[in-house]
Image 1 (cartoon, rainbow over the protein chains, first blue to last red):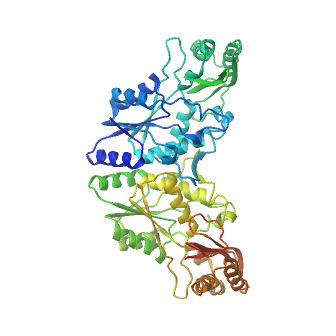
Image 2 (cartoon, each protein chain N blue to C red):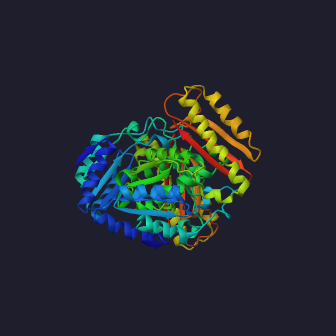
Image 3 (cartoon, chains in turn yellow, cyan):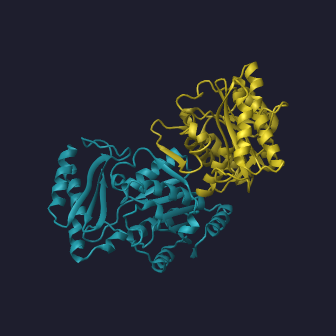
Length: 279
Length: 279
């Protein structure tokens, strides 16, 4: 596996592959890879001749009071994981390689991004759309892989790809969980022992919501209230949002019909965690 | 030459060319082609194995009180001109082919677009950036050709290509003028006989500015004032703006140093015309 830091190196390698007629899969990540990322990489390796992983903590998707500085990084461990999983190219650029000082262009959308996580993180999805556009232009993949854990991100990327006519297949992959149910996240490393236990309210609320729907409950408000009550019973948890929305438009639904997304963001101590399910 | 109306037809043809290793040039236009467009097309034909012209009056770059409805269209004449000039593919989509009803993604920038034409046309460049991004993704050209007549558009597209890492060479081509100096524009058809004569103040002001600089004038305010005075002497002319700015950043300059853009927009009757020079 090659570990490269410049856009030119990526372009040169991908062009060589394309000349040979090989397909290319991209797994965009912010690094500090866990089994959730690994599941994306394994799927990409299965479905493409060559796989590129990008490993870049993108500053433009962090708000001023967010955790850009403390976000965990370990490129050596990431490289070992990618190498073992069959990745051909790991792209780990510096912020200076990705952004000119007078960078002023951005990709954004006027729906889908002002709800759920977008309410608390107003610039987040503009940063995500812009960096993913850049990565798509640099890597020119046939397929790109995103986790269902960031359900809104996945919906936003699918919409962006449709609206801007990217010729790229977006593959969404299921949430990977720890044995006790906690959704895998690089941010789980922020949790102390007590918080780690408290964090289980998210996956428990997910299971509760799924069970209610399976039992035939159609009233979104009822499901939401029960999920909220469960989370609020945990003293270390503070709800940012719990919402039930249409899985494509992300608009609130009152009745469970068609494909819905039940999504939540919850602070456990100072750490903001997300979880969700789609039915 | 093929005339096609769907994105799928363009993609299929371009992919076939790329498999043969052929280079592709794109000339994005709003149609009603004149000798200015023709000069772009001829350059593209010279520099690429295959040339695609897009012919699309893009609704998202027109403001509410602008001339979307009356913008001149003549696809038959355009097709004949393209065919004669050696174009292989003319892409003439409907607005519905280009935009989903719930389209919500856009490309924009927070510099370069709030000055010059962007002041009077606040949504214009977001519409331009978004549709050009879409065309770039649909056609995947090696090179794309834009006229220097829309100097701000050219600067904006160059910046967008740089910031979003499009792997496309942007080629700017000189302004083409009528025998008497008027810059070619599809909007010149709006002018009546009297206005057509009055419209010469734009190219005359351009020549005046060029001559002052050639004579050694370094004071931008002096040059600007003389250009403005010339235009204001014409009763049918109403200035939108006359500005002298840095050719890359589009920020105002007080002294003629480095590459400057002197640009103007002037209403002749109800018709808004633009002209400029770079030195």
